[in-house]
Amino acid sequence: MYKVLYRKYRPRFFADVVGQPQVTVTLQNELMRGRIAHAYLFTGSRGTGKTTCAKILARAVNCLHPKDGDPCGECEVCKGLEEGSILDVVEIDAASNNGVDNIRGLIEESNFTPTTAKYRVYIIDEVHMLSASAFNALLKTLEEPPAHVIFILATTEVHKLLPTILSRCQRFDFHRIDPQAMAGRVMQVAELEGAQCDEDAALLIARIADGALRDALSLLDQCLGRDKHVTEAVVNATAGVAAQGYLTALAQAVADGDAAAALETLDGLHRESKDMTRLCEEMAEYFRSLMLFKTMRDPGKLLTLPPTQLDALEHQAYGMSLSTILHGLDTLEETLHKMRYANQRTQLEMAFVRLCSPELDTSTAALLRRIEKLEMGAPPHPVRLEEEPSPQPAVQEPEPSLPESAPVFEQAPAPSPPPQKAPPKKPSPKSPAPPVDIEALSASAQRFRQWPEILQVIRGSTKSVAMAFDESSAYVNGDYLLIQAPEFAFELLKKPEQRKRMREAVFQVTGQAYKLGPYRTPTAKEEEADPLDELLQRAESAGIPTEVQE
Image (tube, rainbow, N blue to C red; front, side):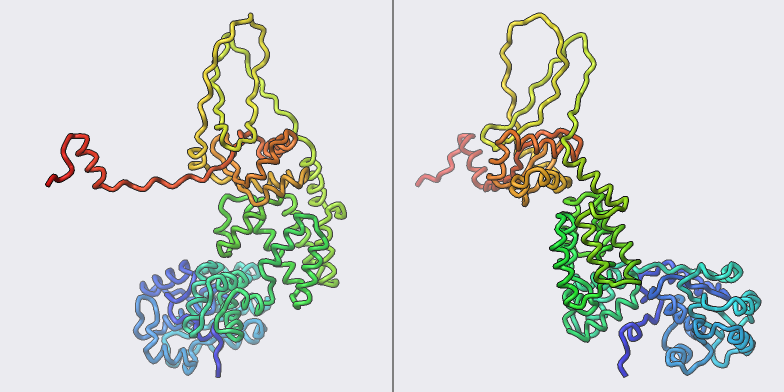
């Protein structure tokens, strides 16, 4: 009979358990030192290894030849427990055996000594399902069990347990498994099965499993039933989730206010039999990723995505306002609750219509979006820099100017000092401003992450300039903002009104007046000279003949 993957590759030793070192290392040390407790409590989310560790612990305490706290797996007791021929380890499902009579029978049975093993171990799974009377019946035995009895309680909802139960057990908390570790385990199991699993597909499986390795292996089992080469497309088709491109298109429709495009995308996904509730959950997760990119410096460590998708998310996040992203999160979370009691497709379509047209939504998040849009459309207030008058006029160094050969389109005006009445003086010749080394500035410049937001602001006032700079990028070095764009984009900025809009957009987003200039890709270093040529040159300069005369 075929055995599913999560049962076939269930860990047999503590070292094989993935992502729970805070549990496995502690249990191994206690077993090596002979500090065996009479009651353990394993708590954590589903699929994180609670039952697996309970079974390993049951074999380890009864093993005839333990090795560093692990069962040997070769003695009669280990083999008997794995095969089920030794009945001294009892696993009980508290969800179906939650009555007081079941617990009383367990207590009476625990008084008998084990037949083969050293300890009689009771593994009570989902212990929070026990009734109040069953808990009360178990209290006394759990506090002072017979010397040959060990209780291992496992639960996913520890808050439902009585404090009197918690105080009688040694508690171990199981964490959600790290996505990278889970993806590595998925690829390892696929290789053991003689199949191939791409890294992007393994990361997608880990993201869908949400920290549960059992769910990840179950999904891998389904994918292998479809194709021996598991790709991202195979995982999407098997799990019934939308591809990343659809999620990006829906989010972009919200950013552009294009309700028709969003409805067409939803119709296509509905025709492919995608679950609308699952799609709403994925869109909420997608907007969460956008929020992390908008508010964190390095959100990649919190997201289980390949580098290409992270770059696409980053680019889209900086082109959307934070109020739009939060409005999307609020609306999608509210829609998830409504979809339980109404038509799922209609509720999701209504949600995207409201997101694309915030004037139709009366929520607080929609009002914030509308206010921000009005503020972005209004011209920024001029900045007045006041300087304290000094008894002697300070000598200011001339502003560095970019060379005339470079396509310079504007420099930010320097703040002018307050007018002072002074006697006329004879004009003195001014020394020319030293040229600015564009390549040196570009070589040490850093990427300007707010550039997509600036283009979004410009798009609201003049779409022609925004389209010209659509594929552009910007870099910052001190008070210089260097832009990398095609030549025809700089031609548009020769018009005074377009330059003014660019400066206003930069100041509106950053709150700082930058000196604008072109970005020049640093040129490669000259090839190193041949050492022999250098030696010949030094010899000639010293008067030493370098040619052999016949």
